[in-house]
Length: 287
Image (cartoon, rainbow, N blue to C red; front, side, top):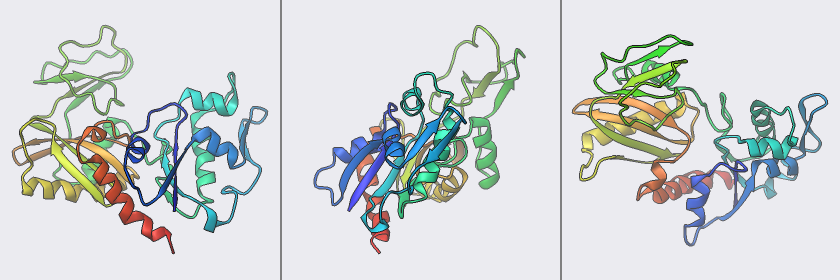
């Protein structure tokens, strides 16, 4: 069985790197840049009408001969846009995501599908993440924040540990000591109380741990984190991903979710979780 891992032309991707480092895999692993994958599938972009044209069947062959697609295009870079449309192309990232979605629909088995504003799942800023997950999981806390539209100044004095950041800074949670020099769409968050916790999953496999040396999760907290995974998967259209939480005694605060594995890939059990998740998922494709 072949697994074809598709990734952006330039953005570093952690899962394919981990698979390549795994000895004696039961699957044959191949890789493709998303631009090469789309072109090989007959998708070409035309500046004349600003559209992709699909010149042959999306998957290009019988389903029995198809590889399993592991879509890990977590971001579409400028290099991908140039590769598909040329140096001065008008090609937009949304068009690449749309073309990728069209091509993937021609494959029998795809792990990781495009969603809202993202080629793999849903990509939403922190404020939207907090509102969505807060509705999904009553009782789960989300951070306090203030947002200043345009040049509007905002006062962070009420916050004990203010963090000046972007709504798309999913993992930079270090306390800031000064606001930005120029206020424009300023965004400040009160860093949640407690110890940061990393929760990550790949299909049905998962792991969680404190991001602090010498501390171990209680069984009660592990159970609560595991119960959050279905809500994360549904909210963010995610087959896989990682989430940052803060645990302060019995109080659990959701901080962010990401389709990258920038934090999880540095954990000792990341490779084991990845292989366990694949092993549980792939037998379904053999029928």
